[in-house]
Image (cartoon, rainbow, N blue to C red; front, side, top):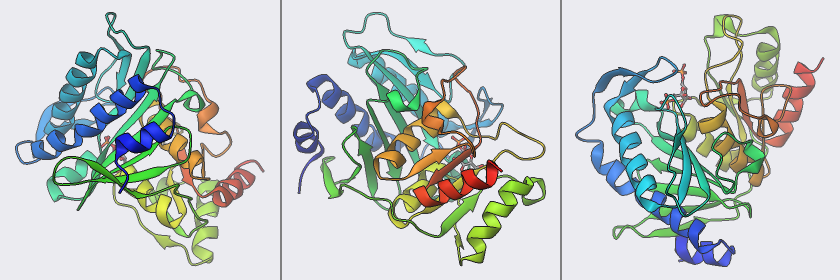
Length: 298
Ligand code: AFP
């Protein structure tokens, strides 16, 4: 089976980018290893005021160290840090955006969580999603799975016993499907969001929502459908973050034939105002995003 390195070479990745991707992807092994000693909450909050799990903090510190030591990255933005960090001595001109551990409320119940990464080659972490050079996530499920795009479709790999990633599938095409999941309390949904969800349910849509965006997206990538974390009547900016969550996942969705939107705009075309810029998110099959935008645009 094709290894990650063989795939990146065949996709024409420049050697520095290939090295950076392989280095970050390899960190899935130590992060997985760290689950057992980091099951509690850390007693701290991130910049969005959310409780940090010990594994959020561990993964953030670990990835930051590895990325800095690579000498390839000029800027790093992380969901667990208040500001963009700069590494002035870097020889490479990459910028990395990351959610070191997405879905952290599921750590203590052993459900699927993951690490989300976006890579820019312009040295600027606060860039638009459509400027990403590459995006990927590592998923800590029954297998350790890497889903990646370097702008030439989406490919999935699984880590074997020796730590080598071997290709599972690709190019992955997201079908039109009927799986849906929505964050936000039902009582706080807006009329347009409710109308959209009811239209999916009327067609036999199946509810799947775990509390881990990256795991829920992975299912939608395979079967089609939509993940939503909408604006609600008490919170019009939503909960998820444009830079670390929406943009890398949106890039992957687009590369697989899907789309991402806040209900009216393609999120990949929005310039982040700050590191923890929040936005309503809808990501999934293209037809459902078109339907959503026609309901919201009325
Ligand atoms: P973090 O674990 O990185 O904080 O992300 C959690 C999350 O942003 C996303 O992964 C989930 O889909 C969503 O929050 C769950 O939120 P609710 O608990 O409000 O449904």
